[in-house]
Each structure stands twice: as C-alpha cells, then as structure tokens.
Amino acid sequence: MTEASRSGPPASRRVVVVGGGIAGLAAAHALATAPHAPEVVVLEGADRIGGKLLIGEVAGAPVDVGAESILNARPEGVGLARAVGLGDDLCHPPTMSAGIWSRGAVRPMPPTVLGVPADLAALVRSGIVSSRGIGRARLESVLPRLRTGADLDAVSVAAVVSRRVGGEIVDRLVEPMLGGVYAGHANRLSLRAAAPQIAALVAAGPSLLAAARASRRRADTDDTPVFAGIRGGVGRLPAAIAATPGIDVRTGSTVRRLERLGDGWRLILGPVPDPQVVEADAVVLATPTAPTARVLTEIAPQVADELRRIEYASMAVVTLAYPKPEQRPTGSGFLVPPVDGHVIKAATYSGVKWEWLGLRADALVVRASIGRRGEEQVLQRDDRELIDAAAADLEEAIGLTGLLDARVTRWGGALPQYDIGHRGRVERIRAGVTELPLLEVCGAAYDGVGIAACVADGTRAAGRVLAVLDTQRTMAP
Image (tube, rainbow, N blue to C red):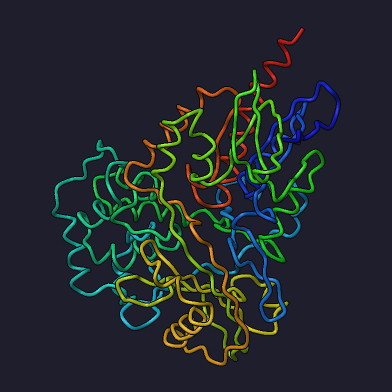
C-alpha cells in the first residue's frame, strides 16, 4: 500500500473532496478561495470532471449534451461562473416561451406555476386540456378550503394537485414539467421536496388556482432572466473551476474506503492489488448516494441506509442537426405529456434558445430528452434506434426532416428521485453526518438537482468545513 504525499507547507490542512461533479467542484472552489485556504484535493473516479456537465459536437459545433442552462433567478451558479472568469460569456435565451405537444399538436404553454394553471382562459385557448378537464379545474371554487397545516413532504405532487384541479391538469401540465426536471412521476414525488413552488401555493391558500394567479402576477413584474447559459456551452464551467489556483484534481481516483484516522480521515483508493492512501483533515463527499453509502457503511451505517433509499432515474439526450428551415421554430421548445405515449419527453430548439449556437452551427440544432423513471426498456435501444425514434417524433410534432447529424448521450442513474418523505430523509442524513467530525455530504441528491442548487450545496458543505478548521486554527497554541 502506498501513501500519497502531502504537498505545501507542513502545517497545511488538507481537505479532500470526493467527486468532481459541479457540487464537488463548487466545494473545492469555496475551500481554495477562502482566507487561510487549506490544501484542496479533488478525487474523481471517472476519467474526466464535470459530472452531468459535458460538451459534445454535432454538425461541427460544440453543444451541451448534459445540463445546458443555469437557473439565473438564484445567484449561486452564475456567481460561480463569474468568479472563475466566465462572466463575459454568460448569456440568456431571447425567449423562454415553450409549448406542450398535447392532443395531436404543439400548443402554446399558458401561464402556470410548475403546471398549476394561472390563467384558465389562456388554458382554454391553448387546447392542451379538454373541456372536461377545464370544467373539473373550475370545480375548485366549490371545494373545501385548502388545509395548509399538512406535512407536504408526506404527500405526492399528484395527490394534492389532482384533488384540487383534476387529474387531467396533472397529466398534461404538471407531469411534463416534472419529467423535464426529475425524469420522475407526480404520483411518487414529494410535494415539498420536488415541487416547492406548488407547496408555496398550498401554503398561500385557500385556492390553488388563485394562489397561482397571484404568484404569476408577482413574477411578471420581475424582468430578471430566469435562465442563463455560457457561450460555447455550460460544459465549459467545470474546467474553469478546476483551473482555480490551489485545487489539485486527480481523475481516475475511485475512493473505495473511508476510515477515521485520529482527528482526521484516511481514504483508500486505487486498485485492490496496489491501493493508495490519501490522508485528510476533512472530507467532503460529493458523489451520488450509492458510492457515498458504500464508504459510509462501516462508520455511519444508519446514514448509509438512508442514502440507499434514494432512487435514481436514467435518461438520454439525443442531439440532432437539421437543415436550417426558412422559418425557424418559435419559442424555446416543447414538453411532452407521458399520457400521449411518445418516446421523447421534451425537445429544445437549442439553436434558437442559444443565439451563440445558432450563429456557430450551419444547421438547426435540436435537443430531445428521452427516458423517465420506469422506462428502462426505452433506453435499452441502441443509439440508432433512439435517434430514429427522436427524429420520428420531431417530424410528427413540428415537421422537421432531412436529418444531417445526431449523437446520443446516455445518463444512467443520473437524476435522483425526490420521493414522498425525501425532506425528512435528507434531514436524517444531515443529522447523522453532523455527528462525524469534519465530514460533509453534498450534491444533487439532497436539496436540488439544478446547477445553482448543487453549487449552493457544495458551497454550504465547504463553509461548514472551513468554520471548524478556522476554530481549530484559532485555538491552536
């Protein structure tokens, strides 16, 4: 067994971040840029960093084949991009209007709050929901007032929304929204954890529809762009973070075991015949729940058990290039309700949504998402079959033909499912981790799956570690 040597001055503290996805890199950046920064080592098992942020090439142009936008409405993600020198490359979609491919046509999306209608008249005009579905939604006015004291983590999104405004609203508006975020289903996802926007409507009471109208009126007065991108692709962000002075990134470094070592930690990695040891004063575990549970099984078995209960869904991104049409599609794309039985669950007109891509590509680039929880058989098709299925759906939906180029990017087990009880589970995980000195967990499995949420969680974990290290430093003789 070999022991990895420490670099830097002898008194330097070392923090090891396990996992080089966006949460782990955000933690590493916060650690490396702090006053009295410790030595920071990032151990990533794969041969690249970035996790679900990745740039590929289609029709000769760079495109995001993983996450392709950052929530701009909260500051953490765009703030980190600015901090690592990408501020001048931040950009915003010229339009965020989207459609729903429902009942045989791509129809304009009416104002909603995560699928809860904010304007029934606009919903009627859209044709997304049948007259029967509209009538059921209107019945909310005669239903008993909403009860706002319930545990909203103990109920599903579908249970609350369907009870108030009907199952068709869930099927044709809420489900496609949640499918785009989690690749999950409304009847299993926790209202509080997976749909906090709708939970806020419930808390506002007494009517879900009235609360949605009020929420949209407030939102319409804010002209801050909802999303941001990065020219050349959001996938540029990981390398920019890793270039921060003081961050030592080591790919191909799978941590197999974590052991307590006095007041610090010992990490065992590498192949079993020739293991390596890395010692650390503190550890941040920024890996998915399965590998996190594996290294915590012996030192925190109850935490490991809770981690294993968080399930994941798989999906694929099919990026396609078509001859530029004389009239480009309007809006940023469309969502697809699972009830209609199509293969794709969403399509983004990437060359329209991101002007830099429209200028750099000699084609119209469209991104199709495939795969929801429980649809593993769809993802078992080979790449050619997935491309053909996506192209057939796009031709039927908006008439695109003449495919020039395409690529499939598979994201197996990529999206954590915030099932009923998720918030309680996360609270128990965090409480258990708190009992382990100078150990933190972070990532998409806990408080949010988007880039901004992951950056916030990684920064939070780093802050907790730094607070303890600073206390130890000030108390040292």
